[in-house]
Structure formats: C-alpha cells, structure tokens
Length: 405
Image (cartoon, rainbow, N blue to C red; front, top):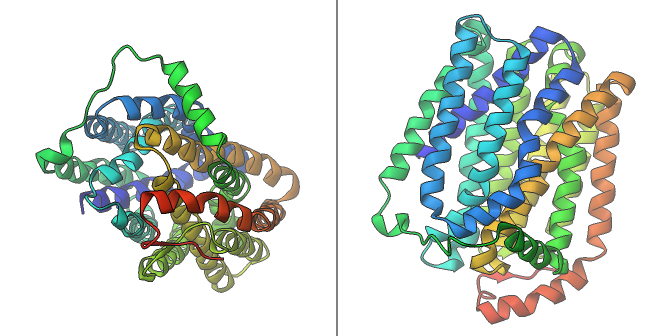
C-alpha cells in the first residue's frame, strides 16, 4: 500500500516533467535529452549496483534510496513553485534520480523473494507487484493532467515528494525477520563479482535471450513515452489533460495484462506468450503511430500497455525463478540495464529521429523493430524451453510453473 501511494506520485512527476520540458522548449529532441539523462545512469551503474545488492542488506539499501528520491522530488518542487526552474535543473536532478534508481531497482527486485516464504508464490507476487505499478500508472497521469491544467506542474512534484513518506513508513513497519539481511564479505572485489555475474547471466542462453529481447524492446519501443507530449499537443491538438488520458490508456492496458497473468493458475515460463506479448506491444505502437484521433489512439495504447506488461512480468518471473540467490542482485541489475538502461538510448534516438522524420514515422519504425525481434525470439522458444526445464525439475517448481509450448 505504501509503494502504491508512492508510485502514484512518481507517475504524476513523470507526466508533469515531460509537459514542463515541452512547454519550456517546444523541442522533441529536448524531451529525448531529458529522458536520456534520467535513465542513462541505470545503464552505466546497474552492473555495479547489482553487486552491492548481493553483498549488502537490501532492506537498508531501500530505506536510503527512497529517502534520497524524496529529497530529489522536494528540490524539483521547490524550484518549480518558486519560478526558478530551468531545463538544466531538470537534467541534473534527472541524473541524480537515475543514480538512485540504479541501486534501488536491483535491490528491490531481489528483496521481493526475501519477503516471500514460499517460492511457489513468486509468480503471483510479481503479478501483484505489477498490478500495483499499473494501478498507479492509471491513476497518476490522469490526476497529473488535471492538476497541471489547474495549478501547474509544481503541485505534482510536491505531491510526489510527500508520497515517499508512505513507502518509507511501510518499510519501517516491516517484520524484523524481513529486515534482517547479511552484509557479506566486506573485502570482496567488485570487478571480480561483476565478471562472475556477467558470465553467469550471459553464459546461460535462456537468460541471455530474455535479456536481449527485453533490451531491444526497451531501446526501440519504450521511446513512445518520450514522444507522447508531441502527439498530445501537436498531432491531436490537445493539452495536458490529453497527455494524461494517453498515459492512462497505457496504464489501463498494463493493468489488464497484470490481471490476465494473475488469473492464470500457473505462470507460463518460456512459452509462446513471451514473444507474442512483445509482438502485441509492437503492433499497438505501430497502430498508434498512424493515429490522429484520440479515440483511435486510446485503444492502440491500451494494447501496447497490455503487451509490454505481460512481457516484462514474464521476463521478471522467469529470471527470478532460475537464478541462484547469491547472484540474484547481479542478474536483476542486468534486467534493470536491459529494461531501463536501454530506454535512455532509445529516448535520445527517438528525439533525434522525430526531428528528421516526424514523430509518427519514428514510432512506426520502432513498432516494426519490436515485431521483428519477437519473431526472431519465437523461433528459439522450443530450444530455450528444453534448456530451462531441468532447472525447474531440480528446484521442484514444475507444479507451479507450466512450461507452455
């Protein structure tokens, strides 16, 4: 519940920041630069922060990262409400938050298993976590669109800062048994551990294939979010409320994908659902790229949100269930690197392409690349399924996880 409140504030800040940058600069490229600056730290730092998540108390890490994220939001709110905000402030604060997230995400993803007594519940826990994320994505942008129109962007930043108190309070209220975590050997070699984690993740073909698919989808497909203000204002002739509706449609689709996964009695592992969901995401983005009408755009974005959430949640579940616990932080750091770390490169690429080819053509190319990647992965599913099945048999989780064909 605490994380749900905080995530609503996070999505409000994301939408408000995008609208503020576009209002100040009228530049699609600058939207890409801001998106790049806030996410590139995850690409650079995530492998190293994954080592820290494996070697140190993950609970303590989360308390510190949430407190620092709250500080970032308060500074952004203060600068905006006092009228001193400039684009370079947003870029610097975005880099700061990106550094925080590069440590927070692998620690939080690894901490999920620490909170669960029965590993068989992992798939449902991840589905619940995804549902929480997407309920926030549904509510946050809608509220942000209304608040921006009434009071301006600063109110959204302030609400986000205050919302962090909920998740910090929730962390402090956890059972003592969950808070306990060993700080392993303090004289470890971070580069040696990084190499060990890299060889472990990319030396096993199923993990490598999942990370590569996720990286391609993030690089080419997730850039649609950066260009959303362009579509809302210039293509559809709307305002901040239009941007809020478009983002909410993605959130509603993602929520639908989460409910779909949660309704399954057994979570699909390396089945056709993984590449199919990536292809569905690509189709939705491609359809949205041709739309000039909000009533066509909303269903297209709903489909996109459904596809990306199913693919992301399945990838997370599979990785969490097949990795060794002492390497979980490092593998999830590569997951962070693939999903969030590639997004800034995609944001910069999309912003540059939008200037030259237009926002619509840019998303058409992005959507087609996602579809092609899903087809390539689909051709390898049978082999990957056979490779990973012995792991599930050894772990005794075949009763909970169905290997679909």
